Length: 147
Image (cartoon, rainbow, N blue to C red; front, side):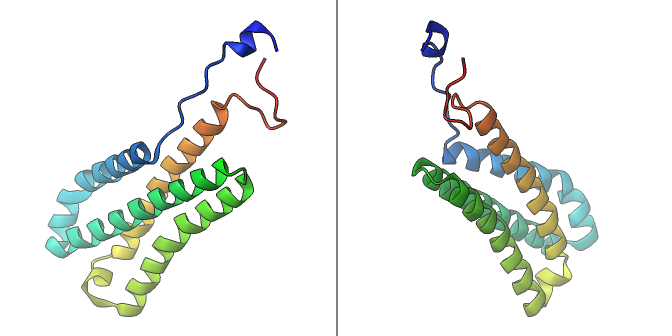
């Protein structure tokens, strides 16, 4: 090991509260941006539909992040990726199915459309965090440290 590789400090890993704060901030910003139009078009029920969709996607994102980090720390990166993908997709999908089957005011207000929009926004942020974690890691795929 040379002096340069010995001086590489471990990177600061993103913690789940910070991830939750970032996802919440992004989706809250999207809600704030869309709120006037939603309220003008649909009233209070539209805001409830948007809020329900945002909270579902925030919960799925944070749960997937926590599960992924725990399995990755246990040395199972493939299982971590598969579980995170499943959780991130299954919770909003289950909510969409529930809304479609149940019908009701949230469905009529377009909660499934809002769910899709917030899901895509959360997925972009989750992917960005995952790529940033891999590219800033001091260990490469072969298990060797950067030189």
